[in-house]
Length: 578
Image (cartoon, rainbow, N blue to C red; front, side, top):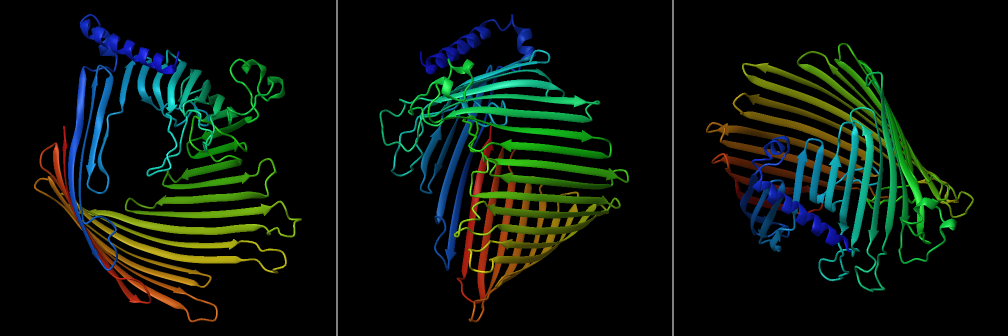
């Protein structure tokens, strides 16, 4: 019988059980007290937004006027939950509604049951992130764990090259199970499996589809071991995936395939079938003043799993992250070193190796003065394996250094808080893109950037605040130079016993860019942008609020080429919760 029949039967049984439970609720009072079930809940909100927009100097970037309304509700009766969403917009979208959601969620002692759309997370590479329209059962009696889920993970979508084209898809069903012993915050051992298969006939007999029906089964053992009262923690997880890319491809004898013999009754190997794996291992030592974390991840080339989204395969990563605290935890120094490479099987034309280190120091000098600093180093190298070819490009590399320092001062005077922060940064990067044989020199790009920011925030206990800041950025690279100056200032205030909040912010930015051309005069562009934002929120009641938003921006050309424009938009929004 089809899976839909079993799901409908399960739903009817659940509904019948709930109705029976209502009739005998007096006799089952202790059950309801120990479970998460409640008689009924209801909630939602409605909102209405009207907006206007105008601009001169450039084309309109949105409609001159817009009206949007939305309403949504959700309710539950003895764990059975549902709801609807309704949206209407005059901005070329019209009426949209969604009532296609229904679910059941119940927890009793160590048992949890969900029905409807569920998002199980059994493993990192096996089942993680795929939405299952069906059900989920989770039981944790003592230290034992049992999880099971099953249902539809994709619905059939016919190819449609017209407006609103979407990638076609086969109807897909999936099942997963997980067994284990132990606790998540302690030592444990789990083993999980995931199986998904496309329905070959769900799109008819179309022979020109851009997709193929697929099948996938994964097996994932994972464990965690805690020693020395939790000071040392070791965990690992490995997923083996058997993936068939095309169920219409020719079958092969199981003796000639890569799958173990005990799976003969479950899978039928085909010419497009492939077995692969991905895994991760971590170790962490946590002492009072010292912490060290190490990790290793490897994802084999061609690894795929239908239980999660797109994953970047053919990569290997090693991570080492030590940190130390001293001076009564007022000083903390931390470093993270990450080594990575691809082309694990050595069968590609290029191999990429990268090294990324990030070091930081934080020092609480006094109760009012603190200092933070960071240094980031990145080295990326692409090596060409076809160096013997006359048309091969030489190796490419990229190196960058990023240094920043930020002192901050915070102090209180007469119920007023003052915060002053200053930051400065320097970035240097050099990229060598290689060269073709015979050119004699490589194409190298060098860039240097300097930046600084100064911010001051003034806040009182009744919610009044003033914020201001200035910033400067300068970047020099081959034949290009950019300078940017900025100023921001704003204020906020609470009125009528905090029922009304008004925020006003203004900013001005001047940008100067210079581009040099060989044998020609350099081109200089200077732009000045001025912006103003006002946001007002009024709480009419504890369930009703009204907000106003006004934004204005002016772009002025002071030198060079470009377009000047003035832009203004505003909106009013009413929202009620119930």
